[in-house]
Length: 421
Image (cartoon, rainbow, N blue to C red; front, side, top):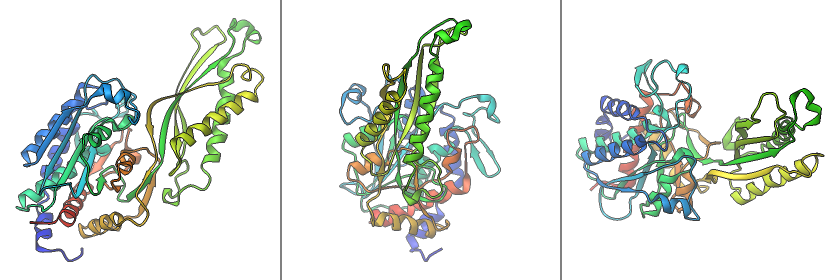
């Protein structure tokens, strides 16, 4: 650990593991699946905690009608009757020198039988906190809170503001971050504590959701030769999509390391037919399509549209009945930190000074809120506790040690970026 100032050492010693784990467990216990009432409940819990920490808190109902019609809105994949934004600010006057932004919504737990217990009843085992949302990304949000708690416990007053953005809807497009920025909450730089497996993430791929519709010709299954099975048509289309996917993996950004599909295409849902003894004549497939770092969304869309048109034209049946493509749900552009920006070095230094291992620079294949902050002119990186490989699955967990280290990192960043009065 590098030499620390007396104030830095005092703040780091004030990071409270018990306090942090207690609040992480309380947050996991709120089943804040996107589109449910608990998505709002967890935001109010966060707002209450920020007030307890002495922050000036802005909490507001997000205008969902505006979010549904604004041309720059990121799109949504779940229905919502309400959504809330929460921002806590502490420190001096003016534009925040540092923003810590984290989402509180989670994805559904899937088959409960695959979990070792109730996914929304947190448990601590083998030095980790387990449960849905543990690493993606409630631990990151709590690490930010723990940093503020440490600053307050140590009696430190920041010269410039530190802002904590609590956002929803990240998992299905970025509604909360979009609404927060639109409300005027900005900053000089931003760290999003997504789970990064102890790396600093400076770029991410984009992701677009889509729907494909194919038409065949129905017939009695006993005379299947009289029909055209839409399932068999889809096998042809899917093989073409896999070949297209392989082409798009060429020459990826080196920050992806050995990731095999930085710009993957995944079919997540397929529905076909309505009777077991009939040749199916209609199929709907929904999927996710990766956008290359730096590639405009419009260019990525055009590439898939062109390939599907070529696949249809090359098939005797689909030539007259081409695959119908609809862009649906969330639209994640790619995002990145400007080359050479000092934020990367500042985060790396804070990690090592807080006792963490030297963090490598990485890119991730997932779409995130980084691109919204970057598009707003706010240099942004990811650094946070946990491993993204465990997110969205029944083994989701976060090491307590990483939770504490992240809180120490954010406390150092706040001191060094915002200054001390």
